[in-house]
Image (cartoon, rainbow, N blue to C red; front, side, top):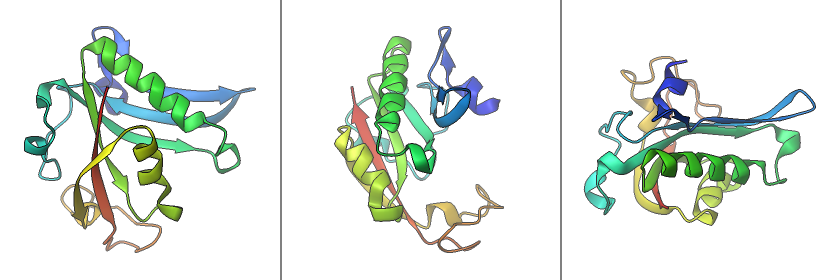
Length: 152
C-alpha cells in the first residue's frame, strides 16, 4: 500500500495493472515526482533535469506466458501519461542488467531510456534490502543496477 500511495499525486495514480479475463497479467509500480527518496544509488547531477520533476519507475513485471505481447510497453506508457499529468517531465529507474538476455535494460532503452550510471552490488546493501535473495546470486547479490533516465 505504501508503494501505491507514493504513486498518487494530484488525485492521479501512476501505478497500473493489466488484467485479462480476471487474470493478472502484469503490473507497473511508479512513484510520483517528489514522493520517493533520492538515495546513494541515484545520480541526479547527471540527469539534466530538476530532480523534483522526476518520477521513479519502481517495479514492472509481466507473467511469463504474456510476455512479448506489448503489455510491458502499455503499462509503461500508462505510467508515463500519469506522471505527465502529475507534472513530471522524466522518470528514472534501476534496471537489472543480469535479467535474462538483458531484457530489462533492452526494454527501457527501446522506450527511450538512457544509461546514467551502472551501480554494482545495488541489491547487496543489507540496510536497504536485508532479506533480498537474488535468483542468480542468492543472498549476496552482485548484480548491476543500470540507473536509466527517460525524459518525456
